[in-house]
Image 1 (tube, rainbow, N blue to C red):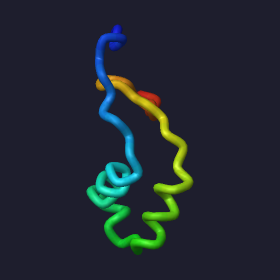
Image 2 (cartoon, one colour):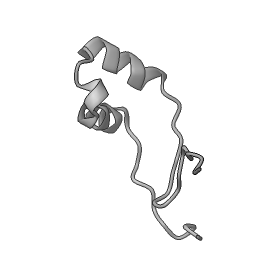
Image 3 (cartoon, rainbow, N blue to C red):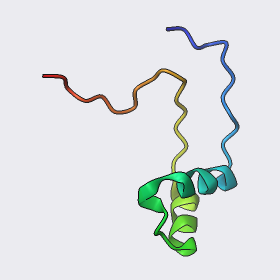
Length: 58
C-alpha cells in the first residue's frame, strides 16, 4: 500500500505520555517512570495498516 499522501499525527512528548496512559500495562507506572520513558524514547513513524510486529502464522 502507498501511504505517501497520508499525514502523520505530530508526535509530542505530551501525546506520547497520554497514549502510554491508555495502555493497560502502563497504567500502574508512576509519573516519574512515564516521564523517563517519554524523554528517552526514539520517535518512530508508522502508517495505518503497517505491522510493527509480525507474528508468524502456523
